[in-house]
Image (cartoon, rainbow, N blue to C red; front, side, top):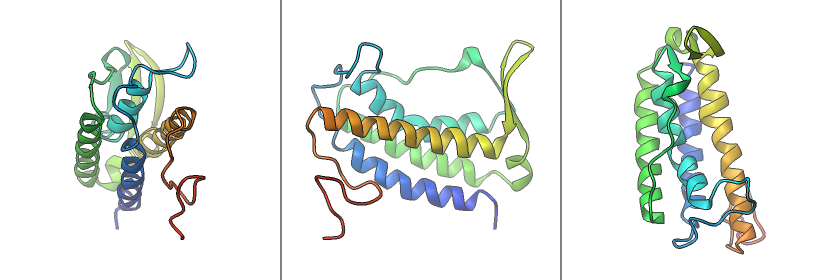
Length: 166
């Protein structure tokens, strides 16, 4: 078994959970944010939707110039966010399934010219940024939804709004 197989299985499971959260993002509220320093709801939801695919693409590189990091395109509807999410999961699974263990343990870097800003094994990028960073922002998104009084779906168990065990 490849060392990435458990991470791909986790991606599939968490992708379904993330989709349930993204389905709750209301059209017409994309400009809302809980604080002046916060991302807008639309930008955060889109970031959550596109993270797996974008990070998987970056993981295929040996190094990423910091100047090449980009913001996702604007979207106008929840349906568009869900389409980005679905495509992102498919891309991430496809790309990660091509990576062998040797490549997964290879060094990956973020650089600014000759300066190395971040260096880690490629598999650490997948774990820390593609997955953990993704979960962090999904958690933020659930807070945004709660503040907008939108019922939250089950993530890892019951919420005050939904109990999958009933």
